[in-house]
Amino acid sequence: MTRLEAHLRQRRDLGRPLLVPYVMAGITAEWKGLVSAMAGAGADAVEVGLPFSDPMVDGPTLQQASARALANGARPSRLVEELEDVDAAVPVVLMAYANTVHAGGVGSFVDRAAGAGVAGVIVPDLPLEESQEYEHVTAGAGIAAVLLAAPSCSEDRIGAICARSRGFVYAVSAMRTTGERDRLADSALPMARRVKSCTDRPVLAGFGISSPSQAAAVAAVADGVVVASSLMRLLLDGATPAAVLDQVADLRQAIDGVA
Figure 1 (cartoon, rainbow, N blue to C red):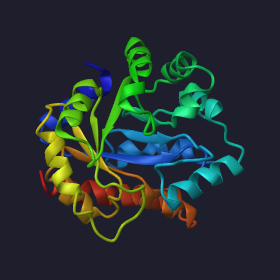
Figure 2 (cartoon, rainbow, N blue to C red):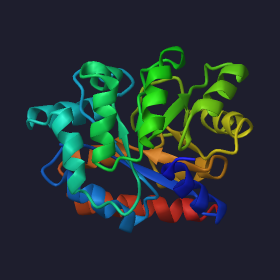
Figure 3 (tube, rainbow, N blue to C red):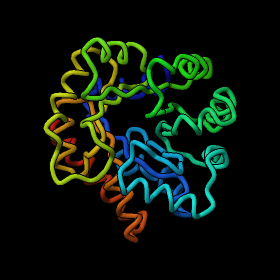
């Protein structure tokens, strides 16, 4: 069992709904401090996105966040190394597109991630049929290869994803890109139930979970939630990192209400 999964299982088994907020690496000069501070606001792990020029599963907010990071001079390889300076107190999970992972070789990418203390990696555009090398290399480095299950998946495919995912299983709430939503997708809760029925591994739902009330509704079914776009929207609109941490605390309070 990877250290990411052990950490999340321990908290879940104590009755704690899991909260994983997201930070786009390089979006502001203060991004590393924000990652470090999120545990204090209630995060159980932190997802750190690496900027990419063609973020195909991301909606407008994370596209803008990625573009801003790249305009600030951010480069994925350097950002991974900068994570060595982050004392997050909870596991850090990288989100990177397949092109970034494969550009210099999967082994090189994973070695840098391991050297920076990364506990898990999510590659949202890497199909299950093409992920064997990635899963093998991450396993050798003690890093969890977190796989995603989407509403379009058959029950057999969800079962295969649950069997091969490490750390947790990422339940995609809807067949759409990431982004803030006024209401949960109709598929969000049924999808969480489908994945939960296939595994005892922690199941975290994401994509379109924006507000504390939405997070609470999903956390009542899944083991927890990933929240990204609504937090990065705050930074894009000029909010301070402190305001983002306040929102993380509000999310924490909301999901704790379902425990």
